[in-house]
Amino acid sequence: MPTLTNHPKRIEQKTHLEYEQITKEVEYYHTEIGSEVETTPTTVKMKIGVLPTDLELPLLRFLAVRKHWYRTSKNERNFIEEEIQRMLQEGLIERSTGPWAAPVVLVRKKNRKLRFCVDYRELNSITMKDAYPLPRIDDMLNSFGKAQWFTSLNLASEYWQVEMDPADRPKTAFIIQFGTYQFKVMPFGLYDVIIYSDTFEQHLEHLRVIFDRLEDAGLKLNPDKCSFVKEELEFLGHIVSNRGIRTDPAKIQKVKDFPTPLNVTQLRGFFGLASYYRRFVPGFSRIATPLNKLLKKGVAYNWGEKQQVAFEQLKQTLITSPILVFPDFNKQFILLTDASTFGLGVILSQLDEDGNDRVIAYASRTCNKAESNYSATELECLAVIWAVKHFHAYIYGQRFKLVTDHEALCHLFNMATPIGRLAHWVMKLQMYDFETTHRFGRKHLNVDSLSRIRI
Image 1: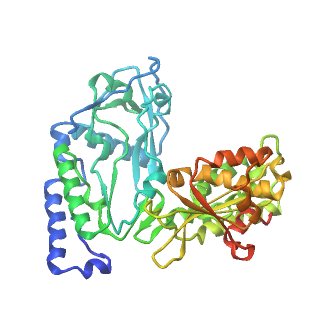
Image 2: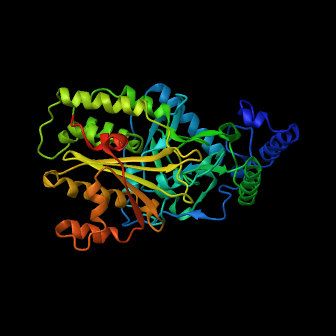
Image 3: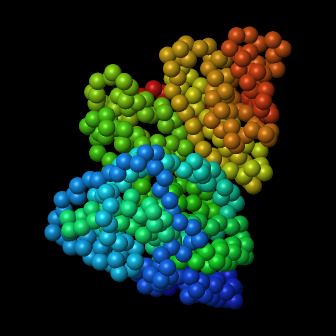
């Protein structure tokens, strides 16, 4: 049963009546929707898939895929047998006699327990893809805005609450050393829900609406994995709170523990992990330049002192990354840009209630060989062009402030007849509504460092 233990001080300060109210709400929906049993809810046992739909698996070509089962240890075989018996008893799977077969794989959960999975890579490669758009992670993070309260919900047995179309069940068949089985329900899927609100009262109302929708759909919650009415939550590898967004320490620990890459494959793995958080790192591309060079085609993988310094600096910068604020689309955005022959640097920010500059995101990139030969004014203008393109979703359609330490750039936008590539760039910028402010270099150091100092 989920409770509001370890609730933040602001909940403690709510009246006793309000505290009882939210507790009763959770208790009520725990009874009506949740389930204290750790196995699949009885609704799935009685009728597999409670949603009024069946999952179909249309194929690009009908070519049955049959793979051999993976060899396992005795303990793993025992676990697989137990899972098979459990899923048979709960009506989730049935024996299969078709031509399809995918191998079973076991993965470790966060609590180190085993999870039963199936290697459907071959099936996925010939399955017709659904073009329905998934939301962008950055858009979801930006949507939190002024949220003060957060709740995350986890569906019990997740995707098993969706029934498979009987005609497509054979395609989900999986093979183990003592038989072949197929799913009667959806094997995998997405199942987490996040609710966020500006006020406590609004959050309570949002919870009621979501609970009612889940109840109408017949979906079940896993109360042990739900977090109710929190001031901060883990979400998609980030920690979101009423202060803003920061990196998840658990994920950053993986960056911290990442060993020195011994080859290109390992370096790409580190880059994929680190790049996910590049919005938190001032001058990410500048720091990573020595590492990027090793990823270029035809370049020998020679790990030297420069690469090691860049590797350690990138890790340290991620470990100590700042808290970024959520964008407020009712306030003016500020773009701070800077450029050098080494690279371009941008900061997107807004002023808070006290008039302090609060960073929303950092961005940077290196200059190519041709760009490094540009004049100072051309480089500064290039930084602006790249900045408005990179942050277009934030600034287009509303007036923003552009801050630069290059005074000539302020006059350029007012020139009657700019020439060359500058004229082309000035024309591009006419689709944006902005005011330009000059800031002396010594006051522009926060963005200046993003584009300078080669490692």
